[in-house]
Amino acid sequence: MATARTTSVITTATTLFTTPEHQKGVITGLNVDNQSAVALTLILQDVFTPDASVGQTSPSLQTIARLQISVAAGQSISVDRNSLENINILGIAKMLGSATQATCVIVANYHFE
Amino acid sequence: MITQLTPLFAKASTSVKPQDFFLQKGSWVRFSKEFPDTHKWARGKTFVVHQEPIIVPYENSYILPGADYKDVDLSNSTAGLKLYPENEQVLYQIALGFKKGDYLMHIYIPSGRYIYSLGYSSMYPDVTSTSNLYLGAKTSTESSPEFPLLHIYAIKNMAAYILRHYVTGGVDFEKCSVKFYINKCELREIVTPTTEQEDKALLIRYYTELTGF
View: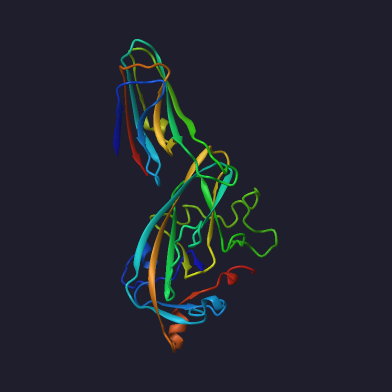
């Protein structure tokens, strides 16, 4: 069990954690405290380069949106375990914001399995 | 040779554990007479595992797109995972455990020769066929990393086992992770085996004997 915390949201995505090669990342809790003065839309991304397969002999970097939430200015949101149950992170977990804000705190609880 | 539920070798356990399925010091193995000349040190002979085996864990993973597949060679060929022995008189008993996920495995030896087929000509594993996709397919339900029941057996220069990793349709990508436990067994030939030794020895069949019936 581990916790990733970031105190700013940026439009180029902030890394939350990197999944080990032979495991999957499982997020068990996600809290967003938007202390900024603007509403934000956040996208949880899974970023990885697949291995070569029969159908994709030269695979390229993939950025998959695993979750999207919108948080009003000055509001907090907790995404519960049930909502996160089927989200697996195969590569790097990143959080992308609709605007760059230095006062939006995101805490993710996760483990690998 | 391939088994999913191997004979029990340990005699001390009161409940069955995965390690009970591994060959141990004193276990007997016998190689089929169908092994070709390239394996004449083993062909038709009976051996005893004469040292305590060493179990080497190993993991391998691939991220693949849905409805797509990748073939993985377990042998020591250039593109293989190199899980085979390099010396004669050595047998690797390799347990495979599949981590949970939306994927399945078809097993071939050598490439293109499926093991888990049925007698009827069209009943063979085929990832391009909706009806035969799950025929002979192995998943974490049947052999997990915590309780690996699928064992393959490899000797030096043996034909390559191929694991076809297939990610089921309807998912974007999946990570296919296989955990291997390689039980390295040093063998000593029993020159004149008793009937009991021949009968009780684990028979390692050549791959041509695994299909065609």
